Image (cartoon, rainbow, N blue to C red; front, top):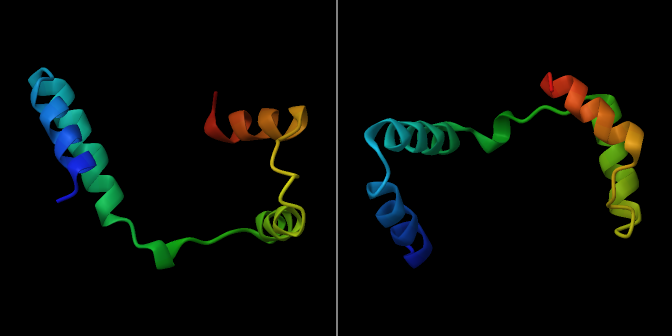
Length: 74
């Protein structure tokens, strides 16, 4: 176990039980994800290719941010 992970666990132990359960569920969600099970749309792949061509193009414009929030239901 890494030091950072140990620090996170130590901090989590100080949380109330309900928050510990939330943190545990998040960790379980992360470790259960299969990195090979990620599927990007054609549009997402094109955007990724565009951004990889120009590493300076890493800032989302206003419309991209709005679309992201809309997809998230925020």
